[in-house]
Length: 152
Image 1 (cartoon, rainbow, N blue to C red):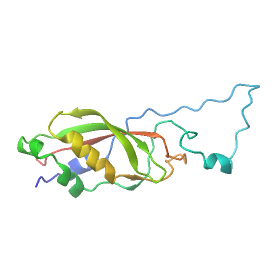
Image 2: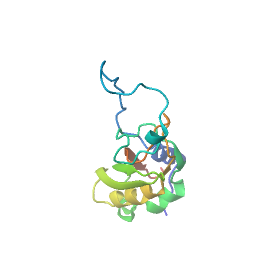
Image 3: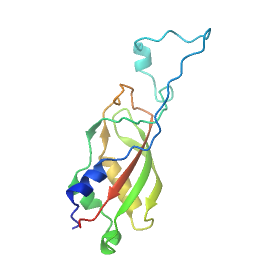
Image 4: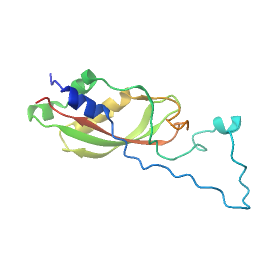
């Protein structure tokens, strides 16, 4: 079995967030927008279709994959070739903190199994229901990069 170095594990779990930060815009003067203030109970119960669609840039996690999880998912073909890899994913967060509808945006190198491994690893993530800014994550896009590095 492949052994990942501690620094490789830390790099893999840094889970580089690739989403751009969202910028709030004030409502124009004279608009029908309600005054800003604490969110109403109705807005806190918004359905995903009504929820904020800005990418999650400051995620909080209830669970992340461990070094053993990453080692177990290391693609055999890549291990045989002593090849490290990286996969960029785009997913949608659910109300329960799972990541769904994940798509591989980039895999380096492609074709050695890192794509499939990333789709397995991302199932192990569990986000908190709100991000660092207190915004619900449900229905919002989440971009991340997962890295596998062989121990030196």
